[in-house]
Amino acid sequence: MSAVLVVNSGSSSLKYQLLDADTEEVLASGLIERIGSSTGSSDDRGIATHTVTSAAFRRAGSALADGPAAAPTVLDATSTIERAIPDHSAAFGVMLDAFAEYGPTLDEYPPVAVGHRVVHGGARFFEPTLITPLVEINIDELSVLAPLHNPANLAGIRAARKAFPDVPHVAVFDTAFHQTLAPAAYTYAIDAALAEAHRIRRYGFHGTSHKFVSEAAAAFLDRPLDELKQIVFHLGNGASAAAIDGGRSVDTSMGLTPLEGLVMGTRSGDLDPAVLFHLARRADMSTGDLDDLLNKRSGMLGLAGVSDMRDIQAGVARGEDAATLAWNVYIHRLRAYAGAYLAQLGGVDVISFTAGVGENAPDVRAGALATLGFAGIEIDHERNAARGRGIRVISTDASPVTVLVVPTNEELEIARQTLAVART
Image (cartoon, rainbow, N blue to C red):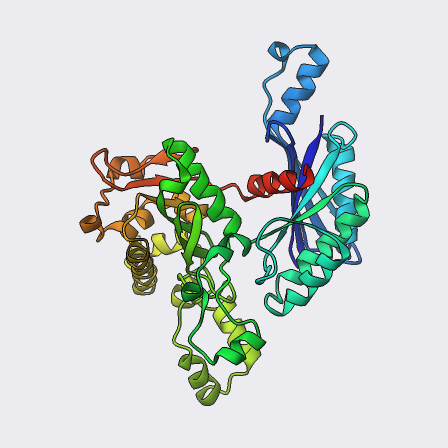
């Protein structure tokens, strides 16, 4: 039995999943936090959680009992490890210890490949790429476009290649899916020579999610992907929209960085650039101050003091003015992008909502599409309010446009793309 390991390395965290290479079942997953802790004391200790899934337990039970019918009914089991985790190499050691102690063992499910999420591939990477020393150099050079993400991604890659030196490692880039944008969609109207010199253009992000969701929607509807015009809203703490025509991204809301576009948990989204000049002059704010403001102290947090949509909705229910304004701004921006992408696509067949807010906030979905009845979009309010785990239709049977909730699975998409490269 073989597996693929998916790694998402952040500056101080490491997420991972081990998936069966043939069935795509998740066998184990984990999250290692507070990378950089060095002493192991109570206030300087890394924390790792490792979950062995019921699928792994069922397989172990079936093997022991010599038949799947005898496999026990079990639930996921999560274990916690606390220790000093000074760097990403140490984090990988913690991960390997967790597999050895809690299972499933990597001897039983040896990884045939390791897939890595890399946030920014610039214009250089437009498909999943086998990692070589030259690719590592390119990822490092692109850190200028994603200083908060690419260095951490690269640290994870180097630690993983050290831990698993004999298997292929594949980089899957958030930006790659959007490399099909036409020049009219990715070009900013600034001095062309300056833009070219500093690689300033729209790149787009959440590409693995937009790709997964648009393909899952086509499969669910049993319609050819290349015949569908789709809008996908990936709404989480970070949020983006994409217009997808025949499986190809033709427009997306995020730009040079993940800051542009929709209102997010702590990010401003679209903003008049002159606001920055004004704050620099009048509030004496530095470049670092402005970066911190727009990325960490804006969005829903800046408007209402909380970044979680559930807290915003609770505030609206209590009649709080700040929460109500934040909600209205959020919905206004969603409608603006929905209308823009209807125009760019010349109509739409499918609209999908995904990620934490998109999958779990029916009021957000209803609000985003409430004014679009003229375009043939009709929400069934009972379907929209109903909870469910899989893909589900929330539009009426008579709606010419199908509206879906599609749970995203970026790890599975990374695993699929990794295996496609590793097996060639």
